[in-house]
Length: 94
Image 1 (spheres, rainbow, N blue to C red):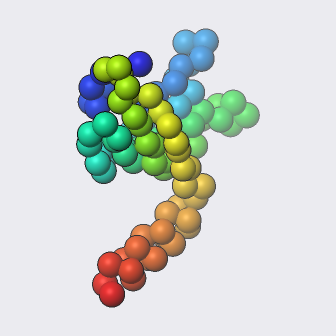
Image 2 (image 1 turned 135 degrees about the horizontal axis):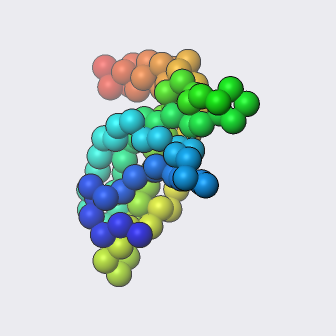
């Protein structure tokens, strides 16, 4: 478990293979409840290659000095990411 926001990652290894490769992250909110958006790729065993970029939003809670993941939302495709951007942009313009 991570004690600092900078140490939070979604990198995940299995049998010395980086299965989930974090490409970037953006901290959306800090504090006892922290929200981070990650850009990542996932290893595809069949293709023996990493997937196109994917995105996830994770919510962490700091308890007893360490951050623990509480929730996550995976953005399933580039199209869905663009739709989220479009809706939020529309709402923020109102």
